[in-house]
Image 1: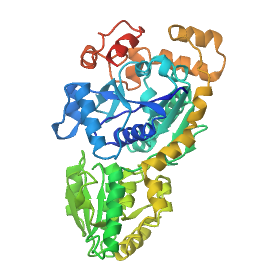
Image 2: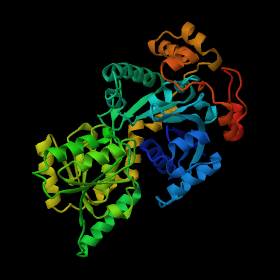
Image 3: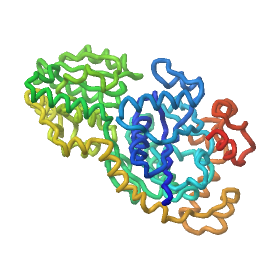
Image 4: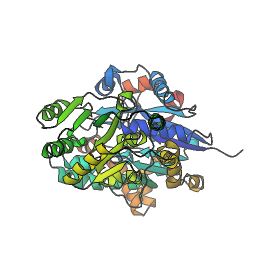
Length: 476
């Protein structure tokens, strides 16, 4: 019997945090495992109760990893029509409030046994490896594929001393990604460029949205009046997610857009400011709390307005297109994938925004063809991922043999190429608490703490540099 390929998908977030790196890797795992030809593991962060309360919405918390897994599987089962045959494993994580992100604690690569280390998919590889201290990912796995989700440089540029921070972060990201990844897939050209990377949107949409769009088309065929509502936008309510640009466009062109009504849906740290700014506009803008985009209340909107340029590939835009809506978005690399769909209208300036919006409100959306529906689906996204990642080459690739206990000396004395020396430097720098803190790591994350180990069912923390694999196997 031919050996099944093992694929481990590591990501930086998990449900119920409704962020792209929680949702998309979950669907990726389900669809990669769908045909039964691969053994797939999804490796996600486990947070202590304190961090769960900080991050998860609606006071949702979990007392154990098994309870958390049950929640995730139930959420997924409500959205796909097949049984998902993949495993879920947890790694210890801590929430960094200043970064709004979850960071790993300890060497999370050891969660996967060496005999199953065929392919690692690192969702946000820079994020997962900034502070990685342990066995080199390329030494552990035959193939390491990094999927770039986030335009970190764009976000950093908006902070204090943003230009300097972005310059520094660009080189750090390039450094760690080149050390730890064989292949790099960028969801769009809106991300930081990496040497040898390819641009390919390997994400699809939740099948619920395609079903909603199909139902709308069937209603259209039956003569029902569709899209009784006008325009809306949904997204995390922070200024950088397009709210600043949208309100400015509406304010500057309130005369040309007279009579336009826009509904905004979102929750976030800038919600109060967005509400106050919306009240001062000369256009009717209603601000609502965040809501699941699959909620039926969105079905009757005809136009989705999205001026954001900080997204890499906006999931909400794909969902709106899948539901049969007209999308008005900026002519930007993050929207390149959407231009193939007739209901996508792009603009280059504020005048173009007005023209595209007025035209969208006056016209009927074009029904999606079967081919267009497929292109938005997770089936098509999985096909694109398999082509881009070239997983068939993984079993042919030889693992780089570098003993973990002698990593530094072996790299310095035996390896002469730049990449190995660079990997050695990162290993050394990431191994000291002082340098880790200096570069922004959460204190005490060189190894997971006793609380996380206890909750995960692992043995208590051991001395620095010792392997945790035996306790992880006990949990697995």
